[in-house]
Length: 473
Image (cartoon, rainbow, N blue to C red; front, side):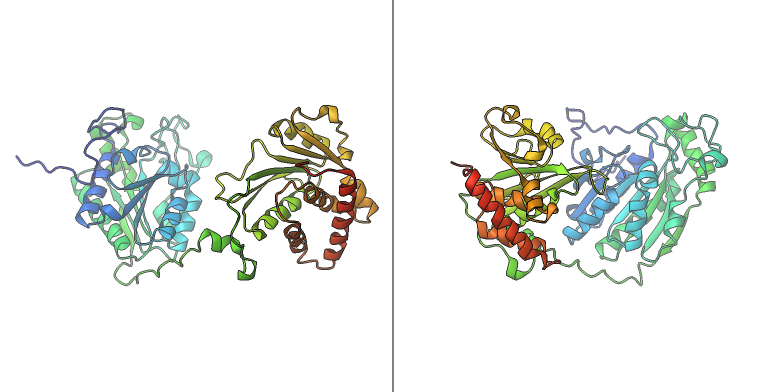
């Protein structure tokens, strides 16, 4: 007897730590059948080496141990978003989102609806087994009326849990999808019909024609409390009554290939802004600076960070700005981290900043212990911090930023005073002219404020030169 070998899989599965040909699926589960159909189609259509499979949380979360294609995991419900990104950044690839009903139909339904509405160029294979299979058989969006589950032990009630979600019917209301079909994995005849639907969806991807969605009604013997034959009968006799098998749409014959995605700009092009503002080549000897600015919302903390990040960009450095703030418009805690480097920045955060600016005492109490030894700590005098409270091994400087801003007639310009202090101390490693250029740029929409803040910068700088030594001195 000739036995056809499965194709498109790895020779051995390394999931358990030792080579095996066993998957983690339960006996009678539809996932194994569907895996074979998909891999067979990819090989037959010559698409295996072009394919990237996206699988999120669910029973198929370990699919990357089996499919011999490109694989990427996704957060729960976010496979459609990840598939969108892959399609747009890797043109020419065949992208497949493989999701279950507890993922796509619940936390991921909006992502799915929006991707289908946009007509994204990938195929979605949606496994509907009417339950949360991986986590113990809880009520899913597609659980049938009257069907018992771990979270509906008396059976699903329309009055209490609502009606089952019909995903294909919902997506069929949209204009963009090219192909929408519902199939079943209950028996051989139905499996052969599913095989054809899979190939149709993949041919659409091969030809670049757009979004294809195929739903598969699948048995889950373990959570249904049935053997494999009973579970298949449940799919054929119960699920198909609620979810009729149907090709809802097939526009593949008339659909035109989608235009190629617009080439993405390089990182330097994207962050450079206008050509006139493009950064010059940076100094490879520039020592990376990690700075944190903290205070209350409304004190200009975030704007101060943006100005320094912009100054770094103007000076040809790599720069990042990473804000953190609460929901309050004013008065809540606010902070941001700025990293300046001659090289690509791996993380925009700073666990141990080189420079910390605190505009109030809560900011000092929270962040002062994190300043690296040898670092610089600058506090507004109104924070009420004494030198004895400063961490050991850290240079401590007090600047009456709020007081100076009030004396100069602009109480909200305390951040400009702090910018002048940082410039005077040489704490940013940036030229003074670039800091001034960034200060001007921050008021581009309010040009009348540019000379006012320039004056404050100069007056504050004079105070700092009289009272403070440079950070390296």
